[in-house]
Structure formats: structure tokens, C-alpha cells
Amino acid sequence: MPTRTPPPKPGTDPLPLRGLRASFAYAWAGVLFAWKSQRNFRLEVYIGGLALGLAWWLGVNPIPVLQLIALVLGLELINTALEAVVDLVSPNYHPLAKAAKDIAAASVLIVSTIAALIGFLLFFPPLVSRLGLW
Image (cartoon, rainbow, N blue to C red; front, side):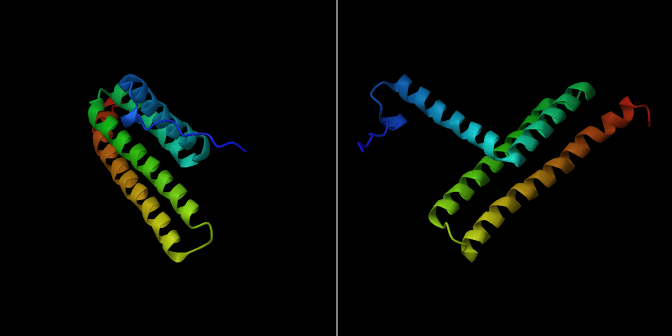
């Protein structure tokens, strides 16, 4: 079976725009992989969309909402990448592999919890005012 040569690394391609295009293609392939394979990533995208819609409806500044969404989604993607690497190098159960995956998942949990708390603090006052409860 003939072996295929890998494409040039984006930074080494003699045509810089082609290399840049390849970099974006690789990144989008990662997003699509996460979307197709990671239920939590899809859920976090939906929740982020709801948060943006709520920010628009309540007149809340969308910048901190976008920052929190980016932080949670970025960390979820890093968690997914780490899990894939751990599964590749340790296909059999190993306590350290489990610890690495659990700790990466814990980082997403902690950031998501803090993001939810910040979201509550951002949205609660305008929501109560909008609903006429205060």
C-alpha cells in the first residue's frame, strides 16, 4: 500500500495564504469533530446561544457573555483533545490516564460553574426588572 506524504505544515508552506487556509481548515475540522462526537460541546454551544439571546433581550452587555462562552468552549475543546491523546497513548486502563482525563473534565466543570454564577449575577437584576418583579 503506497504511503501518502502529509501536507506541508502551515507555517512551512511556500505560499503563505495557502498555509493560512490550511490552518483554518484544520481548526474547523477540530470543531466539527468535537461537534459530532462530544455531546457536552453541543450542549455548551446551545447554552451559549441561549445566553447571548438572553443578553440581547435584557440589554446586557454581550462582551462578558461572549468571553465566558469562549472560555467554556475553548476549555471543552482542550479537554476533548487531551482525552483523545490520552486514549491514543494509553488504550488500556491506567490510573494516571484516568486522572488526566478526570482533571481535564474537572477544569471544564469549574469554569462552567463559575460562568453560570457570573451569568446569574449579570442576568438576575435586569431579568427581575424586565419581569416587573422588583
